[in-house]
Image (cartoon, rainbow, N blue to C red; front, side, top):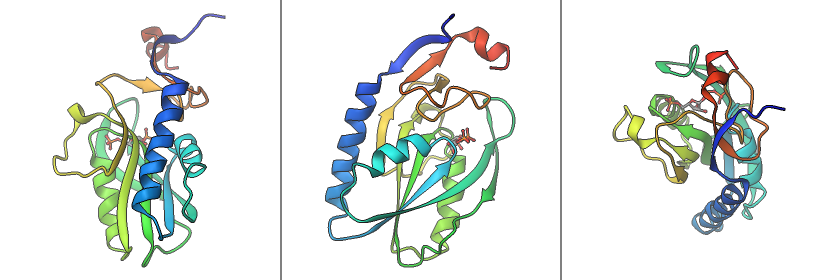
Length: 182
Ligand code: PRP
């Protein structure tokens, strides 16, 4: 079978080690507290499931779905809530879990929306950060797994045309795979 992998950017072992150390830091920071972990569908679902399994303070989970990319690979700045939280977050310590912060437009909007709901605290944990693509300059991402260069990465929850989310590592697709629409 022909491989679609151009280059593995972050291996499964590197991801798992980093997830454990992020969780250690979160365990220390939230000692004595309870966390409402909010996963942003769909890209964060794999990272979130590994992360929460390493968190030792009490957690509950909820999910939101947001549309930020219209078609293809570019963010267009239009952010819509497709699925809202099931439970209120009033007086909860909310930790938003994202797969990637790119331009920052999605997260900026999301933080504004969640801040109006009176959480006790609001922090963000993103597996990946593409700092060089940022359009929102003063956006705080409290926990970052990996800083990555401006390349289109898939795997470990991240997709191209809904494919490749199931790979346990992060990789760059061969160019012919996005030219042909996945
Ligand atoms: C990705 C990611 C963030 C957003 C980041 O979601 O999960 O929500 O894009 O981009 P930004 O910083 O430029 O706003 P995507 O729309 O690809 O959906 P998915 O999670 O369902 O794959």
